[in-house]
Length: 465
Image 1 (cartoon, one colour):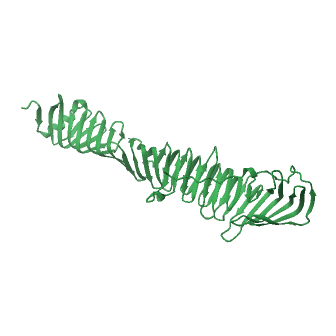
Image 2 (spheres, rainbow, N blue to C red):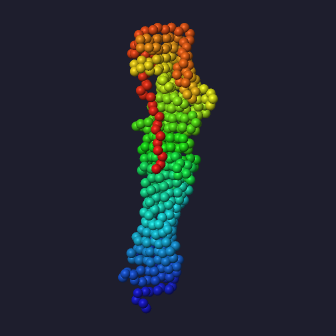
Image 3 (cartoon, rainbow, N blue to C red):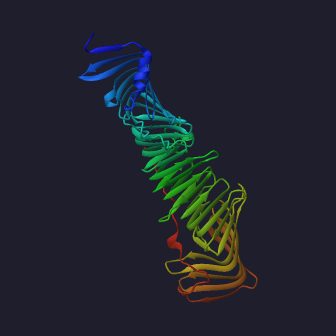
């Protein structure tokens, strides 16, 4: 008999042999043939044909294997499969196993639940139920496809960690970043590093699309009805005619909220009748828009600053509160509250103010033309104000020249504008007036020098490189 080889021909004894080795973590379940031989002065077992081995974590299958029983080690070849007790399935061309750690060579496929990982090389710990890959990987889930340079997987939590050139294509986004955490079963993504996200409908087949956003950190939850997204640590983006900037952004379905606790969030829609909103907090959906805290609103040539703003798309109404200021051409107007009704094309818009109303226009660095009252109504077109009516203890102070100041009191003041310039002023019901020498320190009730604080519109941001 050959000193280097011993052939055991009786197959039933193979099973008994493997099952009796209770001290070994790897057990033999099946093989067509088994040869015990010496390799580098170490006893090894060569297994062939329908080989099945197991450890306490699952079952291995292959066409052939070399087994170092004393070392708790084996190498499996051709059509290699591992089926874990937890449902993890591994497939590859070769598997090198020792003491609970399997190095699977590919192409390798890991299937667990509804996710599939494909990679050239995978190190998988059957005891810890963790995997690691460093030669690139593609992950398929019902929510989308991910690719990355390297990553890890925790089967217990169904949790992936992706690193280096991570690209995730979901139903709503194409995300590009350097790091990402992913829980496919929970349909949850966490991006702890800066990245970009493109709208999928705008990015597929159109590499030059402008639809994108940049962020410092992000979370995405994919639900049955809608996707919920949160972006923070600096967000800016452009989507067709919409542009936005903020410290953070929260999006659920068609609703978007922008926050900037240490600055100003900005949102603009430049389609049709353009509307731009700035504020500490902005909420926007198809039906409404709300803004709070240092709000600036830009629309149809007007600029409004207020503490809060509400927009109703159904009747195109903007409501400003918190002593709003409106800049229109050379004039600044403010009141306790202000409503702006934007009508359809071809009709004039309506403007209504209540509380303490004041209108002013600078003459020079010290003098102003002013009008005040308690109620305001007006008409506007796309160019600017067409007419204004001030009523309720109406007053007007005009500076015709450097030597005279006129003060007029009446029930109502009617103003008509032509191409943004004041064309005619009419004083209604018993106007009374006086002419005095100018006194720049005397103003009508409600005066506030806000001209130097006129808000500026946001600057255009550049797209993806």
